[in-house]
Image (cartoon, rainbow, N blue to C red; front, side):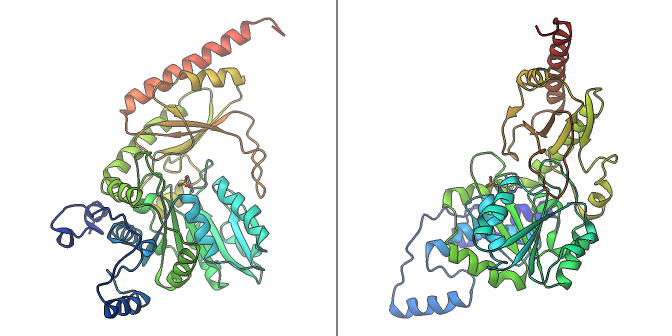
Length: 402
Ligand SMILES: *Cc1c(COP(=O)(O)O)cnc(C)c1O
């Protein structure tokens, strides 16, 4: 079955819900039993993970099951569990793999708050983290220690979008008995199939493209069969779940994911090509462009691209850069992404990376191509760049020190 068909049908069971197309939104904590016998049967069935057995709201309802089933199917994994945010899902996946005294390998291009979780939070519990160059490939072998329990990947990486050699890293990790976790948010469950590439845990900030409308937070962790007991024990131990209305919004967003992603992908490339033609631009980072250093791995392992990419400018006065950003009418200035609207966010990684050096002298920003008309977006960028050029000219004309 094609993924377009899967996004429409996976996890939906109208016959169980009076023929309604969409799953019901169950607001539920207590689940009542009609008799002692049912109480005991449910406890037994639940322990055995019989499908469709509900015994407590936190552990699942027909609403959460609809989303989980659909995501697991799209990811090609065994089971998915819901977290209240993407960051909570990143933390839940890592906590499923490590104990006090363990060592964790994390890509240097990891999402910032996940980096803090590893280097600050986990350190308090005796887990040591080593960050590694996202382009290390098979060279990661030298970083393993006897107590390395997990390798945490994010491909392409946050902001700088390095594509990682997931199969090479996963093969080495498996040989050493370490679990492989990937943050798969950029690719969505459609464009990278983690379980075909040796991954054990796939994490999504469902907040981004799955929800797709910037109106709910959501985290998703999917596992292959043999990691399921670890994920289940950790997630239930932490008491992680999400509210039914947000779960419903994520389930609803998923139904249009395939058509939305094609538009994000197409418009993202149009905008990236536009930037690449501007003389002020030093480099566009977009793995789906043939010029990109990540393009070969992207072509080998990915099935598509989203609307998120980065741009590095040649140095301009900061006031001119601000004039560009402030002149944009269609691009919001904001950090989250994956909604229907276009965004821009400036970034500077000089103080952040530890395994690699980030030494770009010019301004850097990340673009999210939304679902607006790509021509309108390019015209907006054009007027932004005109504002930047005008500011450069006035600054150049000002007397020194004026
Ligand atoms: C946004 C993001 C997260 C965190 O998701 P939230 O739902 O905002 O907590 C994690 N990983 C990546 C790659 C992200 O972009």
